[in-house]
Length: 186
Image 1 (cartoon, rainbow, N blue to C red):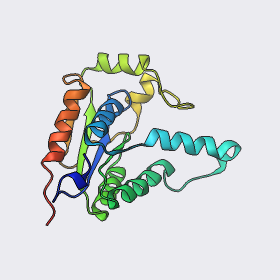
Image 2: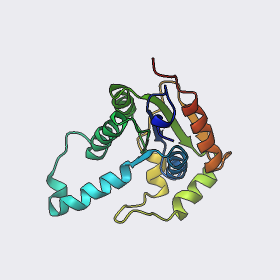
Image 3: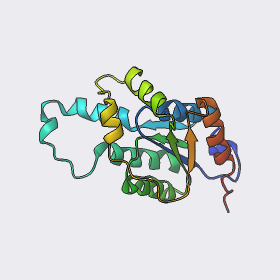
């Protein structure tokens, strides 16, 4: 349901982050479907950028990660239209988390930050090794790459969804409950 369907509620930016193979895409998509929200997946954006770069890919020397920067701006556009947005990415650094939050706040949105984790290491590894990618040209990280990836702890309050305990629909229900608790506009 878009914010237009709920008088008095500003649009909501749901920022879903977590390591690869925790279930963040599955949860994020379920949240977006339940809210009828725009869905932005940074893997999709980055893979499209990489395909479009072709032979110039290695020489671009981007100052900022283009997938994230594009995502922030696309989210802002949708939020300014009054649409809810679910943005899904690894979101590993305080800087990326701050940038998502700031994009939402600049657009007058309420921001719900969600970290998807899988607290069962054996299950997380199984998912990482067995998952099938649904984006052409996306490279699946190895288990070592997942576990050694730079990923900083969250430094502020956020919702944690543990997919070793909850299935995707239960996780999405908790996220939607947080969205429903968003403050009304003044």
